[in-house]
Amino acid sequence: MEQPKPKSQTGSNSNRIPVALTGSIALDTLTAGEIIDVKRIITGSNQTFLVRIDAGPGKYIQAIYKPEKGEQPLYDFPSGSLYKREYAAYIFSQSLGWPNIPVTTIRNGPHGIGSVQLFLDADPQITYFNLVCEQREELLSISVFDIAVNNADRKGGHCLLGRDQRIWSIDHGLTFHPVFKMRTVMQEFWGAPIPAPLIDDMRRVANELESKLGTAILLSKVLDESELNALHRRLESLLHDRIIPSFNSYANLPWPLV
Image (cartoon, rainbow, N blue to C red; front, side, top):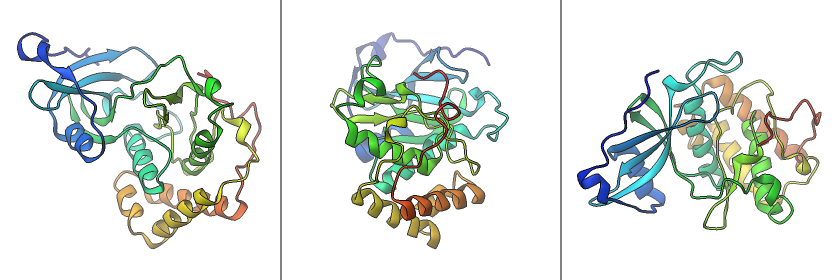
């Protein structure tokens, strides 16, 4: 794919300042704001871009743009589906109320349709391995979430401490496969009981999936029927057992670990 050519940072763009947006305002800006700058992030096998989006006179927000065209083919995930899974993970987290995932949408960009996620202001040197001892409660909810969405790529660098001192979960492209794919570094939580509030949230969402209402309608726009049915089965299993399951520690590790 041709390398992106960022728009000029001269004139009005050079005087813009970054702003922090949340909630519906952030979502509206991510979805409809003009992309005014694009820079390639050279990490991983898939093409990822840091973009600036117009947030009003003299302002911009930063976001991570992952276009469908930049996805490398995988033998076990449908081609061109990873950006949809990024969005599905955000929708599912919003339905549950946890974990914290930056605001995410799907839109067209300089390289076509893809996911666009609000940039997380965090120290990339602080990962899961630095947080697991002191932030266990927040990380446990991420571990439960990963079982539900069948996360095949939970690296240590996908759990970050934001400047707001909250734990955030990122990079959910390899999720929602109907066949078991779990790969995670969060093995300290295997066998741990799931707290009652998380059980209540999962039961509510499981009911929506069974009735094909609410969350089911939103997810059906980006996931197929087999993926939705498998998600429902995983939720029912978690609700029945009320513990985080254990697996083969080596076979279920991602690589690299961070």
